Image (cartoon, rainbow, N blue to C red; front, side, top):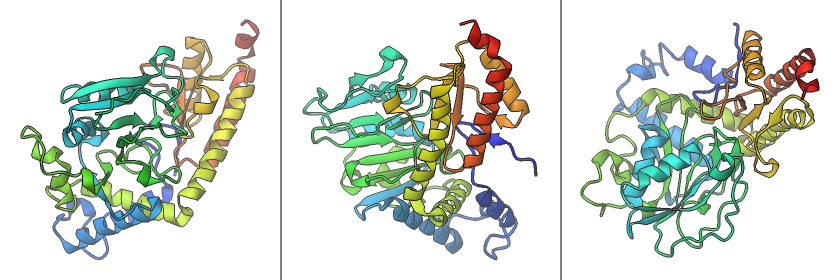
Length: 366
């Protein structure tokens, strides 16, 4: 088996144990004589599968009973519209824009209510998290919205914003299940699973029950009403059965590893190896303010486009793939999610050290 070290931001690396388990069950899931991909979502077998998946994520995140867990389609981007549609009461919401996905959510919300940008880090290419301790949040705002970990720019909220009593909504797509979280701080916490939890095509939304309403405006599509899926256990229509199955295997894997406290410990150790090298390197530089650095996504540059391209090419040849930065920012980005083994990060740093020595003339001429 010739596995590469996959640093993709998403779809991203999955635990090998999960892939092997899925391989074993591909033709016969639990004696059913078929794979999950072929199975009706109305069967008892699948009902037990989704029920266990929900219970396992509840256990991992210690989700209170007054929160619903919904397995939805459309990805996190569809929630950009679903959030304002479902939470709109006064017709106003506060957005903290710290990256491309928060910006897109802000723009989408503007179609359905008055979206107010109360803070932004766009002035410095989203390279930091703004001070959110005393924002000018409208008193009649229906909610305050953040993207907690910014995949493209490599920043992370280390402290939740002071919402001044308003509902907090958070897109956690790229830090999902990477560390313990106090769900009670949020009204809604959701994430596309393709970065740190499972395969593409599924978003998991965790929603406080009092925010799931049936008095929504008539224009809200049936499939975008949280109540539609909440009342039907995420089975109103055919769900993404395969993605739910794989996520369930990932939940089992996370529990076996020691849960989210252990994952945070591992993720901090991995990130420290890479950040420590970047801080000492004369060639490679991180692009994020130190106190706002993400544990999941690490963008870096050399300062020379040709050198960046050479690094990506040589890294790929050595089995370190998907290191090219997002098209909007360039450079490089290493996404080191839960399933990336520490050996992968150590070997990447060793390769970066070797590359720097071999291209030392570039640093001498600066």
